[in-house]
Length: 95
Image (cartoon, rainbow, N blue to C red; front, side, top):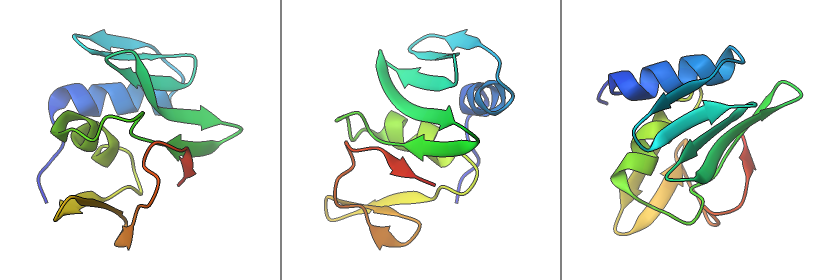
């Protein structure tokens, strides 16, 4: 497993601490982490929710893998979340 990029580390830290962050295509604010304008992580009432926002890209996967408790990998086109097939990656999933 590779370590998250610095941009991912900073974005997730800001998200989990209720802060803001902006760098290139990644924006954090109001408890949401967005990539290219698509919300992919949100924190609500202490719970963390993730989704791909319909974009199953390497960058989306890398940002999501920066969230504690999330391990995503892809095999033969299927995305896996914490060892289980992730059937609907575009729907919000609670971590």
